[in-house]
Image (cartoon, rainbow, N blue to C red):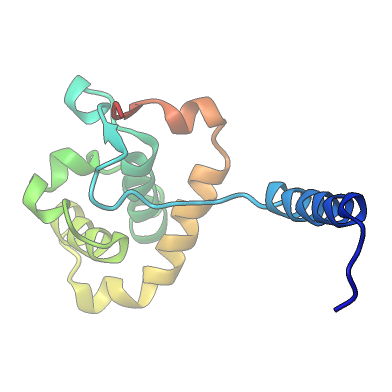
Length: 138
């Protein structure tokens, strides 16, 4: 390896670091707080369902109930049937509880319901999505 004058080595290092920094800033990191260590949902406790909760009811109503509204998620299911469950399992439980539809009937429509949830949340503003969510201190 040929030796470069100190100035050139430093210059090349700075160029390399600058290139790495520009690559890093070009990406967005998305994380999921599955155990509630970063965020706390406060909407349900204050009587206003958050966007995620509303998306469940919207999807079940749209896909399985011809658009006729169903009860909000936290009214239709007890907390132990929601917390720690996947979105798919929550949708199946909500369909059974709110509409009396068995998982045998609702499971084949699960992809449609998940797409509907995505579309629902995607159509909301950032402010609407953030409503009812608080970052935990630290």
